[in-house]
Image (cartoon, rainbow, N blue to C red; front, side, top):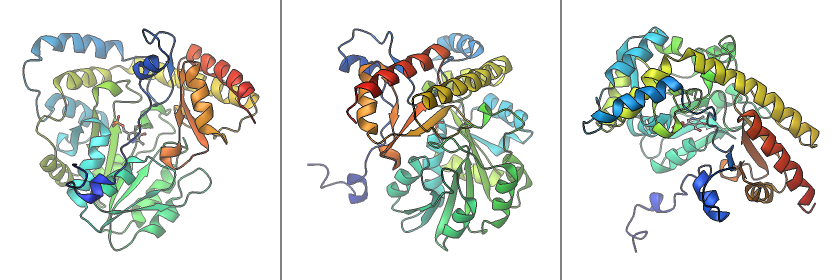
Length: 370
Ligand SMILES: Cc1ncc(COP(=O)(O)O)c(C=O)c1O
């Protein structure tokens, strides 16, 4: 009844397919609880939240009858200090996902173009459709973003060019020199967005700095970061944008007044201060990624070399293999929704979780008909 009444471009929209929650799989397997099920499907940080963040959340409980600080004052200040920018250059959101929607809301209208890479975070495409815009997907160099191709894809109608760096789902990245050259060359009618959801997981020497472009203010550049990955707070939904104050003013106009909960603000503030947790997270990632790469190769698979906390590998019957792993209590992500129907993405987990995945994979591969 409602589909006929809805905006046609909404009615035809395919909803985002997230990684399957542990509880859903427990129900499917007829289990009373989630014990023994491993989720390696959403690039989360399986260390769990930082102890400092958990403490801060406990302290925040008695104030939960109050609305949050709509401007996230203390968190904004702490982020600004971390990056050496003014607090008027930071805006918090309900995950960096919200920023992607807000950017479209602020900068795009029907008929405009958004340029991104092929084989990238599917939300750019979904949001383009939401705003009746065309999403132009530039070809990649193998599994790596091709910034030259992205430049070539820009049209007079392009309003946003979005670079996921490191890229999801391929796990590859483009380096500082390439990014700097790209920023210089993007025409001035286009806002350049760097979606850096995984950047803090990299060792600082290899991380790319795009905030320097926002600081310089010569080009319209916006950097997105999140507390969902390195900081282990995906369930709280906190992300942030960094840009020149006039861009932040625009984003503030299109967001909801209380888009970041008080609990999320308290936890993120504490997590930002937990350097020890960040170092442990990076170590878990380095060790776990090596464990998974080695294990996948030993099983005859050909994983894509990744700089971050997930690994993409090709497999002809990706859907069947995902189902076979689910039966063995391991949740991974089939990549059909990302335009890669013959690939699976597995997140790096704790050592024991990676081992459980590799063991389940070995058995599933042996049982799958060729
Ligand atoms: C490239 C990229 N950008 C943004 C996000 C969204 O993160 P958040 O949890 O901050 O909304 C993700 C999540 O997987 C991602 O992979």
